[in-house]
Image (tube, rainbow, N blue to C red):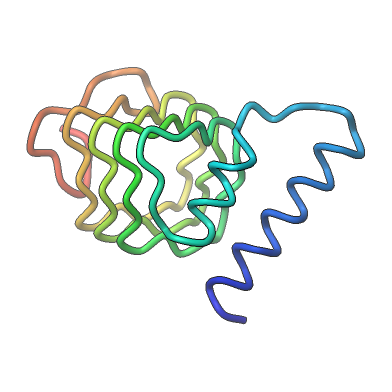
Length: 121
């Protein structure tokens, strides 16, 4: 299954769940579609979105809101998460090798130091 097909499938499942349950997940559906199709979404609202088991290699998510998102077992290798908010996100098994995390808000609420790469310092 190609990366784009996986993203499309994930978006469809999330949108169906949202409409069938009548619950909002917090993320902006247009922002989710944008990141799924372009791997870029600056200053987007992806809070509570499900990116589990997805390869986000090289994604450009500068200043994106990922609070409460499910990032478990996802790969963010070489992604740019500068200034992103990951507070409360599930990062169990996630890979951030080479990811730019300067000034990001980490899952525990602390701010990553400028120049943080691969892990929040």
